[in-house]
Length: 356
Image 1 (cartoon, rainbow, N blue to C red):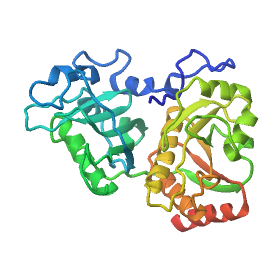
Image 2: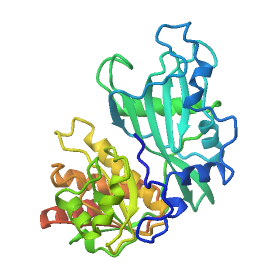
Image 3: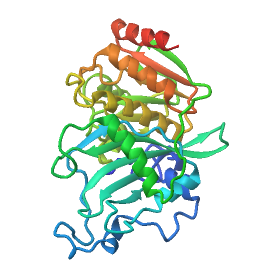
Image 4: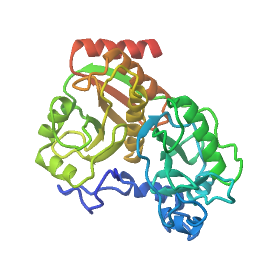
């Protein structure tokens, strides 16, 4: 299911022009330049060219199947140069029968499939990052998923950190050469963090974050308040999109809000912390900040994501929010956590103080 920030109309519907950097085409522009990718890029449509369906009963020429039971895992901590990202983006076709993987990209997402069956195993989403200390456009993973169906991948419980490490090695493998593309992510000067009690719809910032649902329709709590304040144009815009998966983030105009942009992200429902909730909540913040950078946003306001109807414990949610705000490379100068009650406010202020 594509989760594009915009529906690629020329305008937002209220006279606001949608900048190039606000949709997924920004990634291709940052990666390939205005002329687009070269002809040699290997994509999903080329699967038939590297499949011999007569050689194995599970093979089907021209067929790849998506991940059936996706589970979120932490993305590898990697910073890739433009050259390194291009090596991955041109795609990877198995060299011989012993090679188990093929890889291709669609917009900003890398798909890693088993070469014998065509089954999808990993999916990684990347964001283009302009980091001043490198004086160039770099790229980093913002979210990742793995197949958990034991009939397609491997039996037993999925270890998210084990899968993260293997995924990093696999990305290097499909790049075509053993490039040293991983090093610790260091944020030279992080954004200023604030926690306040208030109404996020009143925030005068470049972008506010909405605690959305997967269908991107209005509801209760923060989501309902934002839709009400933004006006019916927001719902009409969201209905032209194709929803948003948990842990992802997309952008719409702010319409009637003070903030010109809304970043919609879908938090996880709390199920005791054993169903990958922390990984998914981390992804919400990482992807939201990636979308903010695409918008050149300098200030952003977050609600206490997932702590309302989704039941995430405020203290645990606050620790994740502050950790991601401090560890995610971003050009945002100010991150404000807008809390809806004093208990939540204390949790976020405490997390900021303890992490400083």
